[in-house]
Amino acid sequence: NAGVTQTPKFQVLKTGQSMTLQCAQDMNHEYMSWYRQDPGMGLRLIHYSVGAGITDQGEVPNGYNVSRSTTEDFPLRLLSAAPSQTSVYFCASSYSGTGRNEQFFGPGTRLTVL
Amino acid sequence: AQKITQTQPGMFVQEKEAVTLDCTYDTSDPSYGLFWYKQPSSGEMIFLIYQGSYDQQNATEGRYSLNFQKARKSANLVISASQLGDSAMYFCAMREPAGGNQFYFGTGTSLTVIP
Image (cartoon, rainbow over all chains, first blue to last red; front, side):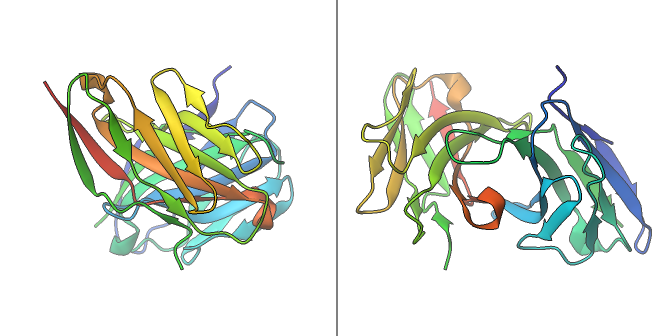
């Protein structure tokens, strides 16, 4: 049981380049989400999904796209990287519904945009 | 308005002492969940403790307890008998039913345990 996996762990991009951050979970969780973590700002929600084929925007969606074609995978695409997107990105998953259902986090991707 | 507010950017505690990390939340939904996560310097997010809005008793998990004051909308984390390994960032989070059970995180508190 690998939990939530993210690739790559580190990435350096030039302004204007595009890339995809991969996220996969093997716990059959319905809910998946992407956060960015910046110093002093906690975790801010970028996009989330409540199931395959269903995605929605979070607090800071501009410049990012997502899709959810399977329950397991939830990739995050940076369309045209900007220095403001330099951050640590976390993918997380959980069961939906009330009750404990805590989010499980991946190890994070540290992205630098030059 | 902020959904989760953590007003202590940094805290210090002596080893073996107890420490309280503050968290207030804002919601109009009667059904919600409150969570605390720990993030050590290695970067991973570790779930610590959960409190449901309808739970009558304060949650406890080992040395962690959650001081839940519903009328004040506060969910403070109490760590007893602090250890050097408790030095980390601590994040309070809330889950609301709206938005498919969306999570909201606070800005975190950096805890340093002094030997």
